Length: 92
Image (tube, rainbow, N blue to C red; front, top):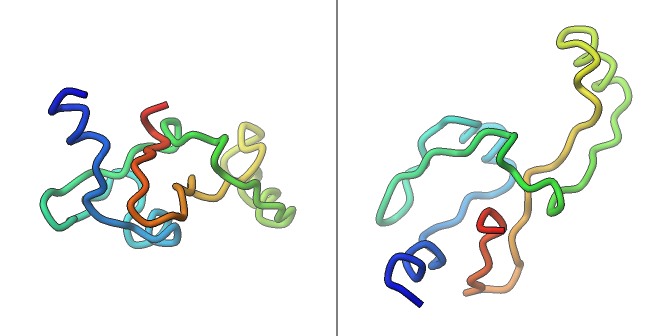
């Protein structure tokens, strides 16, 4: 494994799922222990690691403002729960 791929796969910090939607929304800077990162746009989030949010009133409200292209809501993708795991869902 090359040095660049080792650096890309090592854990450097943690952000709670709620922070990705509120405190650290899309495009915001997150200050981790040794570097700062920008939260990716929703088009780059892997939906295979997300759960659908079933909230009809919120969906209707969003559709009335944004149009019919809003078809569902998803939770932020969740990484592995084990401590020290090297999996990064965004590398898939």
